[in-house]
Image 1 (cartoon, rainbow, N blue to C red):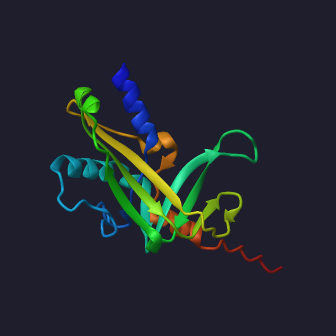
Image 2: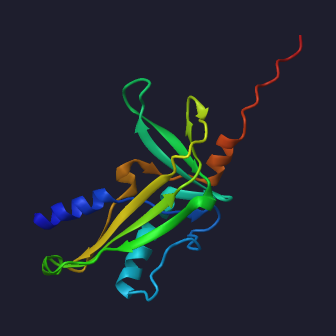
Image 3: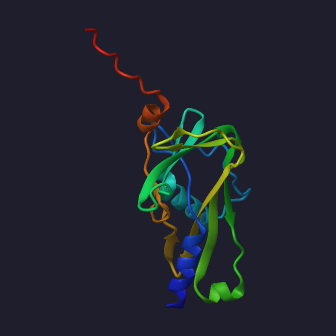
Amino acid sequence: MHRKRILIILLILGMFPFIGCKSKSHDTSTESRPESPDPLAEEGRSRAMDKLSPFVLKCGSNYFFKKSVENSEVMRGTIDVVYELIGEACSFIYTVSPLKESDKLNGWELRAKLQFSCKGPTRIWHPQKGWQLWTEKGLDVSIGVGKISGTWSLSEAFDLGYKKLSCEEIYRIQLPVKKAARPKR
């Protein structure tokens, strides 16, 4: 039971990465990597990227997320909003936490975090309001990854409200809606 609580806490701490529009592989050109990779740590990084890549999307040079949030206008239910982040200021950071002796005795083999950090312009698309103004908020999203007694654990992006997204969906959002011309009488 104690291990389950530790896993739940680890899973809650984390979240996300990213894919290109036309490929299942992810762009690791901006990903931080250790100088001499540990095979266990590399497997953890790979598992985290594979698990989360369907939930974050790179279209062109920008990154996009879709997330369910509380609908504050009607005070009930959720709506799906889309976040757009300028890709030049974004990077993946993979950090392996050192294990204490007590962690090892409790079965921990790896405890790590994959973080997507974007320190630049961000905007949100709201279904009733359209695109909001750009802000400098940026965004940091991470997923926890661990291995305990031979079993891998990753926090689940869909448990945190993130949903799959496609470039086609982004292109539909980006294009202005044209009003139909009225027929002449």
